Amino acid sequence: MAFLATLANCLLRNIQCLISPSLEPPELRLVNGSNHCSGRVEVLHDQQWGTVCDDGWDLSDAEVVCRQLGCGAAVAALGSAHFGRGRGSIWLDDMNCTGTEDAIVECSFRPWGDNHCYHGEDAGVVCSELPEVRLVNGSSRCSGRVEVLHDQQWGTVCDDGWDLNDAKVVCQQLGCGVALEAPGSSHFGQGHGSIWLDDVSCAGTESALSECDTRPWGDHNCNHGEDAGVVCSGSCPPEIRLVNSSSRCSGRVEVLHDQQWGTVCDDGWDLSDAEVVCRQLGCGAAVAAPGSAHFGQGHDSIWLDKVNCTGTEGAITECSFRPWGEHNCSHGEDASVVCSDLEVSQQVPLRLSDGPHRCAGRVEVFYEKEWGTVCDDGWDLCDAEVVCWQLGCGAAISAPSSSHFGRGLGSIWLDDVNCTGTESSLSECEAKPRGVHNCDHGEDAGVVCSGSCCSSASELPGANSAGVLGPVFCFSQMMLF
Image 1 (cartoon, rainbow, N blue to C red):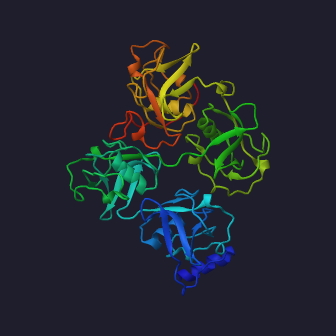
Image 2 (image 1 turned 135 degrees about the vertical axis):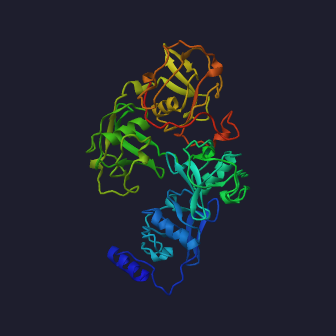
Image 3 (image 1 turned 45 degrees about the vertical axis):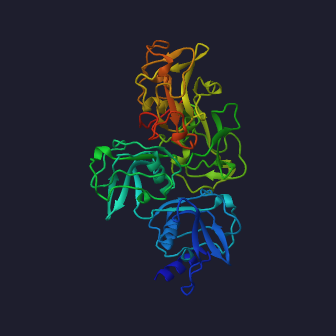
């Protein structure tokens, strides 16, 4: 029956499949991953290993790869050469699996070697292995409370001894980049049911949490108030820009994908979508969301179509949309944005200093022609969230205090800052009058945002053994001081 269903699928789509039940599936492997169950997908054909193009690559395709390799369930289906670029042939393109096939060659695809791809589009897979692990109650699949599957039941991990090395293994196992934080004390809420692991001690080089030293399954002295969590770097949002206008805060929307700038189709484009673009660029609120190539027609690829944002996302890639490059548009339908901060955006009076990149550092504001710092009295993640989104730096990861990024000089402009996290600028938050404070520069406030891919929180100056740089988590909205 599986054979007949596959044949019908291929005939309907007029795409060649290799479906003869008498043929053995070609060899299949995952390379460049953290273990044999994650990596770039490669298949052996004509005695040569080659890659798979990511056109249409999704979790159903990844599910078949994981099943064929005996690697459990599919956790992620990654494209854009996430595990590095392969070499030689690109054997498969336009894969379309239902997810129930036993081997990748039972799916539909173009004829072997027929593709319009390059190795920057190599497909990858992350499988669950055993035991499965997941992150829940976080802002994305790459942050949250750590849970593992044992005896067909999900359970939590106790935070006794939990540190960045343990978090590093979880992030690698899930294909979520590097570990940024290893929060404990049920930071992402208390779990339910069993507490499966306690006294976890990883070196950081293991390929799965189950390879680390730990007490026996279910043996612990904890409660769910000690549930461990993880924050991984995940994937950075693509670069985004507005072009063909007199201001950087208005223009045709373009995103960078596969090292090439491309446009966004205006199908369904509205003010909620524009709001996310303006926030991501630190350009204030959305004023208009014109379509029909209002700022002129772009060139080359149309990367996104049917974008559908709620308006609260921190980056356009957090919205729903068609697969990259899939559209039914022309450049006469290029989407645009007009944001509120047109003049002010040319000179942003807010900056992060002495950090490892522009999206982390000591918070400084410009007032009376002088840069000054912010006191850390009451400074928390909701305040940091406003700063991060104001600068177009994504979400706040931490809000370090005590001059974590070194002491500033000159004035201390703000004290007792109290943001809800939904303000459009830091100046909208409650605070003492400018220049009124009871602080010294040993209390200068800092921020670490997600917008630039950090290598690891532990590499930032002053991070503790858990990699935690400050208080945690408040997610909301942002713009310009």
